Image (cartoon, rainbow, N blue to C red):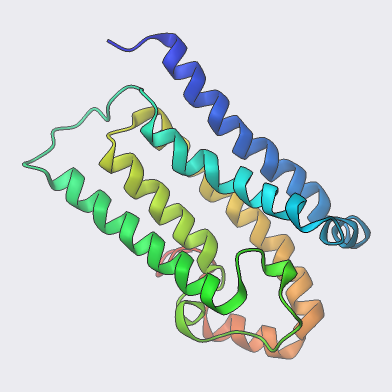
Length: 189
């Protein structure tokens, strides 16, 4: 039986993601603050990337309550592997196009090919898929409960990011948004 202490550790790790996201949203909500954030040293920007992703990828491996379902002969594990692999494909496909920290890339044209032709924010999609997959693989119930929160936070971030993208690319981004209607989850949202 797992202790309440294990649950608190998982919640503390996930709270790092929540806090980093709230701070990032604070900077995204104002062009002046956003500009200051993107002028921060590269290591600061990479630290934020780590604080977004690290807790999501690390929390499922921590000891915690199991998902209260039957395994059906390993189906949960295989579904988890498929989602984790799909997440990695989305993340790697994005990184190959724009790099690990998108704000550090050189100004270029709007990227609409590859995973960007499936969803407008494939790094977030990949992170969500990988997070779901890891929770299923490691049978991590507490972390899995955070998934809707993570999806909501990423959706809110896309709202702010897309305002900047419309400002930067204008009609080209509006056309892209029409061509690729889903923000972060293919066929869903």
